[in-house]
Amino acid sequence: MLHDVLVIIQLIAGACIVILVMLQHGQGADAGAGFGAGASGTVFGARGATTALSRATAIFAAIFMLNSVALTYLSTRAPEHQKTILDLAGQTQGASAKAPAPAAPQSTGAAAKPSGPGAPTPSP
Image (cartoon, rainbow, N blue to C red; front, side):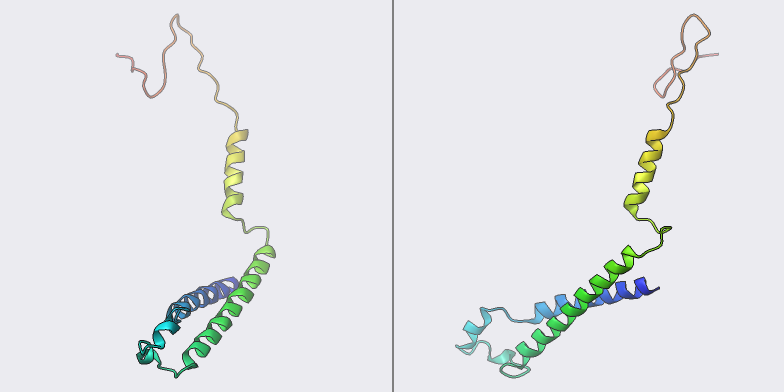
């Protein structure tokens, strides 16, 4: 239950970081503002947008990192009955490697009958 809540918080924080980074202006945006190109993009004032978006990005980044640490801690403290995909794959490979080889068919006649998917079937 707690793991599911933390995963949802992780997804929301990651999406918010991506959105906030995409909203921010790059370093080259200030060069165009000197010639009047950036005047129409000042919704929050001269420095308000940069400060607010940077601060929000830093907050969501801190949430993302702390949540990552919490998810890592929970995954190391998980009960033994919860297995990962790699554990399950190792068990199936180990079981198939330990299985005995099938016995070769015994032939009772003078000529051995071929068997397998490409072998011809005997006619009655």
